[in-house]
Image 1 (cartoon, rainbow, N blue to C red):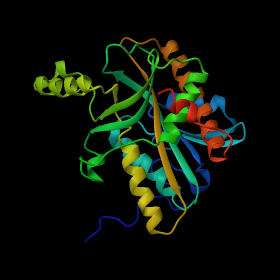
Image 2: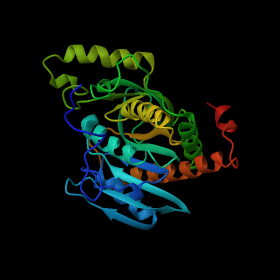
Image 3: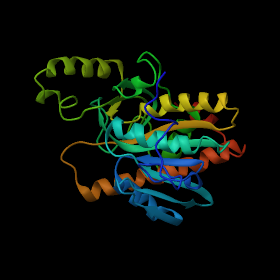
Length: 290
């Protein structure tokens, strides 16, 4: 079969990836992804020995430590198209590390359920793939499930921060789409009645919230795990997400505080994951309460 280009990703002559300008030595075992560069700037303020880089495409990334744990945070931009490109670069660069690589998406979402208040925390256990990019990897019938070690750890970290399940913390299925203003904003579309039927069905079966990127994480995880296995590598990928719910109009300062809380929860969750792998932390208490 004829190829348009060789290899997994495009790169510069110095070995860095084309869009993010990341090198293999920049990769960490714990990776935080955000659509907004602002969230990466907030992450920068919470890390020690941190460096921040803005490549020519403006997709900021930061590398540092948090209480001795190496952290990489990168901006993917808005939507599944940009997420697919940047996520592939990060996972391709981490393929030969022979480590457990954890990627956690920190983002915003719109609640499907009326009982979910604004600025609640949503932690996905699985994602409805209502977008087209992941279908380029595998057919739409293939499931997109998040890793329990991540969603249970993030839930535990959220509870330790004072959040309460069923009140301002929700664990369950979420939805990914590839358009905002004419799909979620179905009232703007000439074919909005079709969109509304779909959204209502997801709401009626219990999907918690909708966002625009997370469905790629499990699909790319499975692809790269299989690739690592075929190459005889010890690398293993784990993925998850944590979102806040929004309601327009928003307040910039208020949202900054909410996003800072999300990132703090994510960092706490990363330490729980790290201790879990070392046999120093149990997740049984969370399993008994969800």
